[in-house]
Length: 510
Image 1 (tube, rainbow, N blue to C red):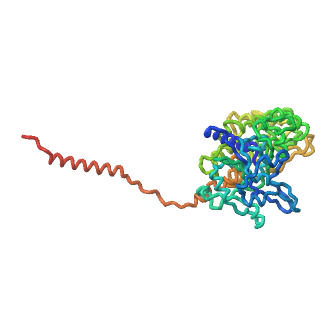
Image 2 (cartoon, rainbow, N blue to C red; image 1 turned 90 degrees about the vertical axis):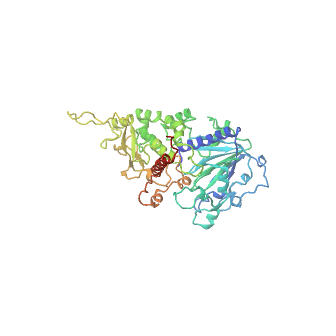
C-alpha cells in the first residue's frame, strides 16, 4: 500500500513535470479532468464497492456546458451511474461526461493521501494496495485508451462491463515475459502534450471528485487549522491527521494528546511504522502505555517523527528514489529507483539483514534488547563480575553493524529480548514465536513497497529465467588479426617495389 514515501514521490514527479512544461512552453500548462467509469470496480452481490464518490453540492450544471460534438465511449456512458442492487442510484457521474474546463494542475499531500486537480474539479484518493499516478505522453495515452477489452473476471457479464485498456506490444520490454499487458485507468488529467493517469491493477483504489463552481487554486492548499473552508473539505472524506511536514505544530500537539488517548496515523503504514520503531529502538508489539510511561522512550519516540518524515521531501531522496525511468517507454521499470529505495529507505521491514548505525546499535545493546535472556522493561542484569568480564554489554566503534532481522509474529525487528507477561502494569504485549520470511528482493514481480513497485511497470521487469534460457553460440569466436596481417603485407610489397625501383630506376652518368 502506498505510504508517505510513495505519496511524496508522486507529488515531486507531478510538480517537476509542471515546472518543466512552464520552462519549455513559457506559459502555465492547463489540464482537464476525465473519468473512465468502464474500469470502475463492480463489487459483489454480498459486498458493494464504489470506486468513485462525488461531491457536487457547490457545483451547478451550467458551470461547464455540454459540447454535442464530443462523443464519449459507450462503455463509459453505460456505467455513468453507480446503482445499488435494487436499482437506486448511488452516484451519478453524467455531469462529468463532457469536455471539462481546463485549469492549472494542482497537487498536494497530507499524510499518505494525495489531492490532485484542475479547473473546477479536485480528486482525493485512497490508494488501496497498488494505485499510483502515471506520467504519459499524450500520444501514448491516446493510443492506450483507444482499445479496451473485458476485464479478468470469471463472470463474463461482469467482465464485459468492468473493462481494461490494452497496452500495445511496443511498450513490452524484451525478455520481460510474453503475457498480454493491460492497465486500468480510472481518471486522468489531460494536457495537449502530456497526461497524468490514476492506474490500479487490483481495482481497489477509491477516490472522491470534489466539484465546485469556483475553480481550484493554490490558495486552497494552504493548511488551515479551522474545521471549515476548502482546505478542510479536501481531506474529510478519507480522514487523516495533520501532516508531519506541512503541519508539524498541529501534529506534535495531537501526538501529545495521543499520549493519553490512542494512536493516530499520519502517513504511517506497515513499512514506515516498522522502520520508525526500529530507529526508536521500540518493540513493535509494545503497548502504547509502555511508550508513554517511560520518559526516555517517549522522548526518543516523539522527537524523531518529524525528522523521519521530512526525509521524504529532501533533495537526496528525490534524486535517488523519484523521477521516471531513463526511457521513452512510460511503462519501463525503474531499476535505479527500486534499488536505491531498498538500499536507503528500507531498514527492517521484510528485509533479512539490517545495517544498524553505531549509536543505534549501542542503544539496543545498552538496553539489553539484543539479549535473548533479557525482559523488556526490566533493569538490565549484569553478569557476575570476574576477571574475564570486561563489558556488561557489547558496544561497537564501527560505523555500523549488520544484524539479522527476525519476524516475531507479524512484526519485523532486530530485538531479541523477551516481552513481559500479559498481565503487566503496561497492558498487553503482542508477540509470537519467530517465523521464517523471505527478503522482499526475492519476490520477483510481486508488488512490494517502494516508488517503483507497481504492477504495470513490474510486468516490464526483465525475467532473468527467460534471459538464462536464451541459447548462444558455444565457445569463444576466433580472433582474426586483420590489422597485423594488412600491415605485414603492405610492408612486404613496399620492400619488393623498393628493390625493383632501385634496379629499374635511372642510373647516374659515369
